[in-house]
Length: 374
Image 1: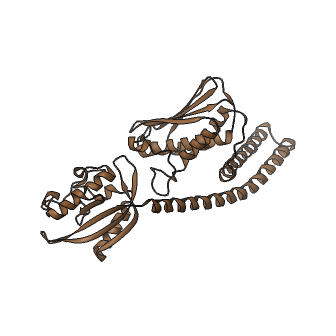
Image 2: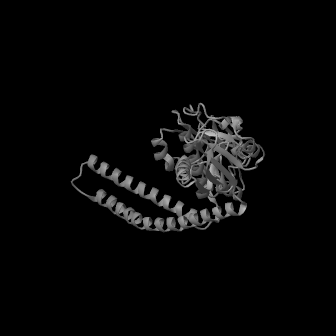
Image 3: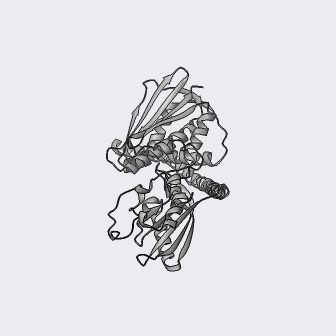
């Protein structure tokens, strides 16, 4: 949270000057209870709030209440409505925790009168969502994801048809160019290269739609022999546009001899794309120049190790225990589903491997994927 200069707060009573009954409630309540002035500056903070969110009262008193939220706009709208109507309920409101994550609570805001200074203040009460409510939200998200999967599958099929036609036409054009007369060698070479580029991008489109269809469809693993480096290079190519846009360098630090695996290349590519995507997000969140992702390989006995490291924002200690939990995400609403890393771990586990990580807050994160050769 960023500290503020609470101008206009001077002269107002501090938490220690509140009536004894309110101080007793703040001291003994297990809920998140806090009060704010008309500018949204926190005046008091309960022991329950300290327990649930990890912030001590002296960490938050004098700061803006919006700093304790994921969605500052939702709180501002709630405060505005509370001033007009006297009270408002915000279900599923997400508070920021000291560890850098977010916790959902049912928040009630009530306008109360300050009898000492003759001004209104807002009392906030955050009640922990019960397990049934949390489960219901998870089920809604699962249903949305299932619907998205069905829609995406249909879109992929629709794209495949014109892409297949483009591929056939480009092959026909290549034959015409090779037989056409009246072309100089330079013109012929230029046209051949253009058609080859079309064919290459067509194959890429087909590969992407197949990835989507595989993700949305049958989850059975199909193992075959393949070159791991081809999978890694395809993954880097897949993410190339985003890394270039973010000015992020990808460094391939690979062993000289490419390991040949007997595994599922499509599923492994899905894992590496997810790890690269998370690395890009971590670097973006850090907001500093010089972003770099390093992919390293090594082999020990009959196990190949692939390490994906970034110099991004890192993972806080409190979040490290949860990153493989289903639906847990540190990304803002609409940016993450909390499914990527759990799915990755499940894929690697089914392939007989293991995925682990090491992270330092502010310094970056490294994910190590161990894959059996066969």
